[in-house]
Structures are given as structure tokens and as C-alpha cells.
Length: 333
Image (tube, rainbow, N blue to C red; front, side, top):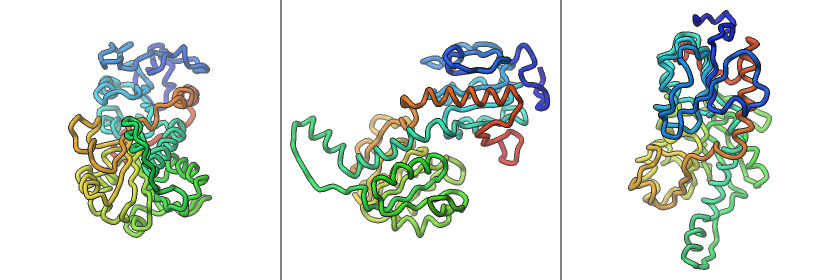
């Protein structure tokens, strides 16, 4: 089989689709390809289900280490589509250069918005209302009340206003926030109001009580939350990161946390996983969750629906959803 973009990618009897969910557990898969199960195994040493050169569509295993996820790519000489089950694709994008031209990389838009937005609100509310202190007090059987900030009447800035950012705003509205400001790579207008460009961050940051990061990790956003960004945040502001750890300069954040001027709630960190002994673990005013924005009960049914839809489009040679990059394209992949 050759990687001919104009040919039916499933016409060859050897054409295979690698799935990280057992095919018999996904109802409605279209007929045509050979569906093979591979998720890397618990320790990342699961043998390949077949020759990677026969794979025409590779669904990247979810919540596996980076070396496992990208390990078969170099041998996938005839692959046409790489489908992630994550919203972010930075880890896979870094290895797309080993693939032939014309390979489409698709993300999992539509799968994680609800769960990630839920967690963003959970972290925000828990941090503002002092839930970590309550847990520690409960463990010590200590009854200690205090006044804490409410989310009501606060000004919130969402940095990264894509599908997840919009879902976060959907959940902010019932909490009677005073104002939501939206920032994305490109300026535009939505039904809820304007979306500002990143260039306007310097004027927006000083007005925000809560800054929620939900932007993809790109060359533009890597290290974006640096000492200057943090210095522009108002005293007592809360930084919530449900994006990627690399968006934040950890050293700069630690400097602000140590002074007590800012607080933070982080679902993602840099480095990640956060190693024992790292100063972030014990920094004052920080709440850490272990990158759990996506893995909830909502994940599997939504992931299955995405795969059935994408595979139907692939088999019928229809345009795919959620294409974020194409090898040999102008994005440099």
C-alpha cells in the first residue's frame, strides 16, 4: 500500500486502524478497516498489534507516557490520520516530522470541554473558599471558621478562549461574576462579547481577580505566564491553570507564591509529573491536582462518539473534524 491521499485509504486488505479502546466496545464503527486494539499496556511494553506500516489511522493512547504514545510513529509509513484523545496535541506534534507529507493530526475537541471546565470551576471555588484548609482542619479535628473570598462579584480573565474557554464561561455565569474578559490568539467577537488578542493582556491583567489559563501549549504560549505577566496581576489574585504546565514559568510563579501576593490552583505543572520534593508542593497558597481535567466518567462515551464520527468520515472520504495540523503544511509539521 502507498500513501496516496487520493486513494481509498481502506481499500487495501492490510489497512488497519489502531484503537486504544477495544473495538468490540465501540458501537457503530464503520465497516472496512481492520480494527486493532493497542493502548501501550500498563507499563508501556504491550507488543504492537500488527505492522505499524499497515496502519492508516492511529488513535493515540490516552493518559500514557510520551515515549509510548509516539513510539510507533516512525514506522507508520502509510498512516493518513493521527487522532488524539486529548485537546492538546503538543506532545504528538513534536514527533510529526517523522511522518510522510499529508498526514492530518486531529485533536479531541468536543470530548473534554465539560470535564475540564468543571475542574476549572472546582479549583477556583476550592481555592477562593479555602477548601484545602478545611480538609487539613478536618484531619486535625479542628473547627475554624473565617471569612473567605466569594466568586460572586469577581472579575475573571480567561486566557485561551477556544472550546474549553467558552465552556468555562458557560459555568461561570450562574456564579454572578462581575465581569468575564476573554483572550485568544486572534481578536474576534462572540455572542457573549469581544475576545481580545494576547497583545491586550498587559491592560487586562491588572483588572482580574481570577485568571484562568486554558490555552494550548504552542511556541507563542510557552512560558507566556512569566515574571512580567505575574507582576501585572493584582495583589491577591488567583491564577488557575487547566492548560499545560509549560505555559507558566514555574520559577516566576514560585517567587510570587512565596511572597503571598498571589495564589494558584494548578491542574498542570512544569515539570510534570511534579516530583517529590519539588518546592511547588509546599508553596503557600497553592492547590495542586494531578492533571485530571479530562479523565472523568464523561470521557469514554464522548471519546467513542468522536471516534465513530471520525472513522465514518475517514472511510467515506469526507472532511475530518478537528484537524489542527498537516505534515508538510504551512504550520511546519
